Image 1 (cartoon, one colour):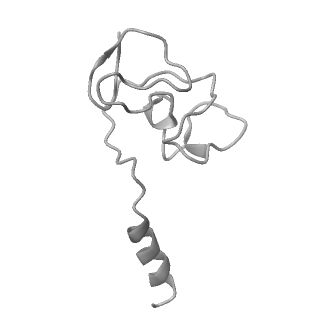
Image 2 (image 1 turned 90 degrees about the vertical axis):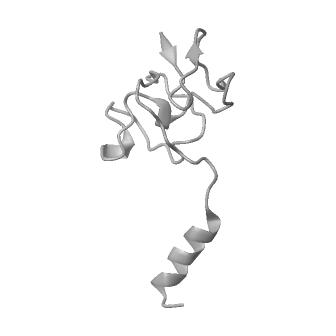
Image 3 (image 1 turned 90 degrees about the horizontal axis):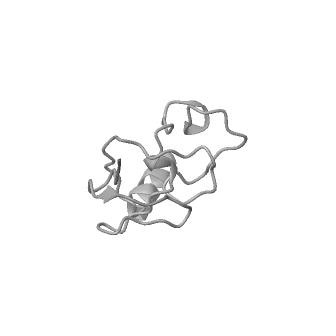
Length: 93
């Protein structure tokens, strides 16, 4: 049985590149939802992949994808103000 790692809704259909959870609307075929995702591993993946996936929260074409059984807590809105503040702090502004 597959379960959405965001909201725990049961998923009883195949997961493809553009699949979203029918309950929460989150994209499912993303690195963050894969059982091989590991932020500390080379290229954030425990599998031997050919290239870095730049955005782990965006749909991809990885054929090794397997839905994780772990809880995912990820805010998929990128906080630009926080990023800009960190960038400016590098130069003492």
